[in-house]
Structure formats: structure tokens, C-alpha cells
Amino acid sequence: MISKTLETALNKQINREFYSEFLYLSMAAYFETIFLKGFAKWMRIQATEEHAHAMKIYEFIIARGGKVALETIEAPKAKWASAGKVFEEAYAHEQKVTGYINGLVDLAIKEKDHATFEFLQWFVREQVEEEASTGEILSQINIVGDIIGHLFYLDHHLGKRG
Ligand code: FEO
Image 1 (tube, rainbow, N blue to C red):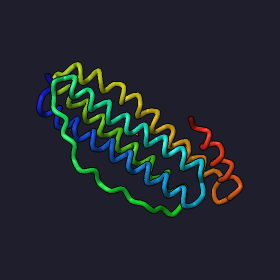
Image 2: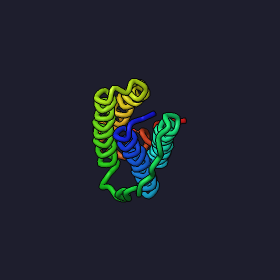
Image 3: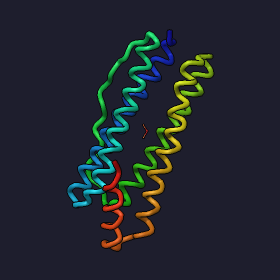
């Protein structure tokens, strides 16, 4: 059985993962408006992953005899100034999420909840990947700068994400 404190904290994280899904879907929609279809596809897949993150926690709460409590999902912003600005925000967002995951791990330790601690290790590893992938794309955008041909090349490359 999971403690009320951890149940509440994990439910909060479900909401944050769904917000991440919304944020990345909104970023995908923005990329569609500037005809960067590969970037849009990358973001749509990212959004799907965020949905899966939320559901992983959802299933865990149920498995531990807790109660899932879904809250209103905040509306994400819909407009950015450039592809670079989108990835600056995505990278910063992932760093913020890492902070939340670390906070949950700290709480699991404090509550002496070994099962939750073990469950969260998947998220700890996942955040390493999430920061690496968004950070790498941000660096690539910064390298190509405003050269439109290079940006389209990058778009083509990102569109291969399966
Ligand atoms: Fe659910 Fe992008 O971390």
C-alpha cells in the first residue's frame, strides 16, 4: 500500500506528464505552421512518450492500492519565435522534469518506500535520455543557425524518428 503523501506526489507527476504531452503536441502544431514536418513528427512522437510516462505512473498507483486522481491539465503556449526557441524550451522543460523526478525519489527514500524508489529508477534513467535528446537537437539547431537549407536537412533527419 502506498502512503497518502506519495500517492498525492505521484498524482501530481501524472498531471505534469500529461502537461508535457500537451506541450509537445502544441510544439508539433507550431512546427506544422512553419512547414517543418520532420520537427513536427519528432514532437508528436515525443508527446506519445509523455502519455506513456503518465500511464506508467497511473498503473503503478493502482498496483500499489492507491487512488488515481486526475487534475485539470494546464494549457500550453502555442507560439514560438523559431525552431531554436522551441527546443530551448523543450530542453529547459526536461531539466525541470528531472528535478521533479529527483524530488519524488527523495520522497520515496524519506517514506522508506522501496517499491516506489525502485519504480522511479526507470524515470531517473529516462530523464538522462530526455535531456540528452532535446539538448542535442538544440545544439544542432544552434550550429545550423539561420541557414534554411541546413534547417531543412535537419528537418528531414528528425522526420526519420520512428
Ligand atoms: Fe516524461 Fe519528457 O519526461
